Structures are given as C-alpha cells and as structure tokens.
Image 1 (tube, rainbow, N blue to C red):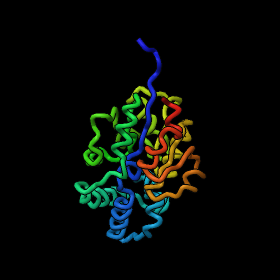
Image 2 (image 1 turned 60 degrees about the vertical axis):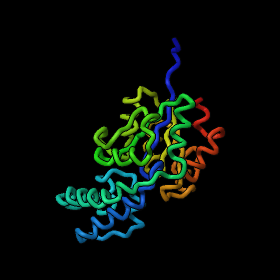
Image 3 (image 1 turned 60 degrees about the horizontal axis):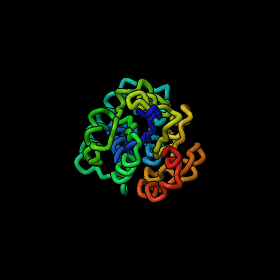
Length: 225
C-alpha cells in the first residue's frame, strides 16, 4: 500500500470558476441603495471576495451602526438569488476540474459562499463526480482575508498545506493563502488585474480557467504531480 501523502488543488469558486463577481457587485449595490447607503460599484467590486462582515466594514466603516447588517445581507442574498438559474462557468472551468482529478489530485472547492448558494454554484459547474470536498461560509469563523476557509478545506479533504496549490481571483484569496504559506495561482477573470494579484503575492497569474488549463504543464500545479 502506498504511504505517499495525497496532493490536491483548492479552488475558490465565485469569480474563479463561475462568473459571479459582477453579479455580487450589482446585488450589493442595489441592497445598499435600497438602504439609503449608496456606494459606487467600483468600490464594491474591489471588496468582493471578502466575507459580508468584512465587506460592509470596508465599504461603510468599522465604527458604523451594525444593526442593519442582517437586512443588508438578506437583501443581497435575495437579489443575487435571482441569477441562480443563469449562473455560467468561466471558460473551461469544468474541464480544468476534470483534468486535475484525472492527474490524481484531490479537487476541493474552498468557497466561502453561503450554504444556500453552494448548490447553485455546483449545478453551474456540473462536475460533482470529480469534486472531493466543498466548503461553505458555515465552515469558517472568520472570512477572507483570514485563512479559516482554507484551513477547513484542508481538514475536510485530508490534505496538508505543503501539498496543495490554491487558485483564486482576488487579492483576498492571495492574502488568505499567504497566511498558510500555500502558493496561490491568480486568475484575472474576477476583474482583478494581473499586477494587483502578482503584487499581493500570487505565484503565477492567468486570464481564466482555460488559460490555466492550457498552461498547466508549466504552472505551479504541475509541481504537485
């Protein structure tokens, strides 16, 4: 029996595998507008990837009255849910997952999406047969850029931080991975630039899942196999 420790790839989902970053941006923009707390979309987009608690702190200030936070989250969730049946994978995202699995790597969706959103994301990807584990926001006490969701992904999949690569699309993803010394591959398809991702510490940056798949043999992921 082989005693070699398993290897795997942790992947963010929103903005990395499924094209949702701007849907979240619009949903937060409308939720805030309805609450008479308008925030420019550009600022909201820059915050997507954080948990909702940190996002609202970032947009509205940490000293604000938090009594309305629950209503803001509920409004965002209701608005975002209108898109669930139309969620679309980013280019060749499903092919990437299947290729990683075919290489003997554990495929772990390290998402901090709410539990009620995870099902819609999984349906969009249509790759449950090759996905080993999936996290949700319920698995983390603290949201990104804290590394809690990655810790949960490692624990649930039986992987070690020294034997994984994380794929994400935001500077918050890169920051979370860095706290665990996990190499992070950045994708610009969530709307964050190559320079920003690299500047945050991403070990390599690609346009989208298709570009990563095309360059897989020369990517940091190839070092796992």
